View (cartoon, rainbow, N blue to C red):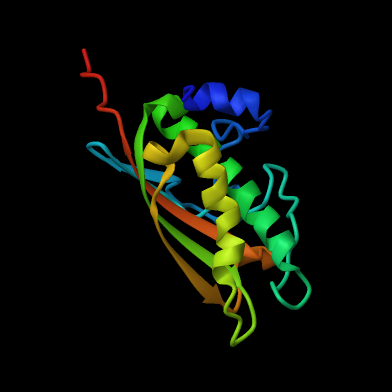
Length: 166
């Protein structure tokens, strides 16, 4: 399979640059990612562009369809690719995706969370392929997320070793 950066170009994905302006301006002071050796933990990302415009805000199963939720999760995964680039320089430095924690705003009893979360994990498989892009996932129903977003993603991954500092 082609490299992840090559696949992004083939898929014509518009990946945001998280270097400028800095991440988190609307949500207060927070750390966008944390790296421990080869483990990279990303803070939560949403289907919200750098200008703060949200894709399909609301409650999945009430005012957001499952397909719209899927699209919101897919866009969130694209934003996650931007954060990965910001943290480690290139998507080609990803060794393996590890775990995704997906939050879906939905009413009590909604049991199709996985269909929404598939939007994110399908995108990761498209970009990274089965070997690198397959991951463990939990989809959790939530009553609310910041700014009425319908989806939020927390991602853990293994990345290539950092080059030694001179």
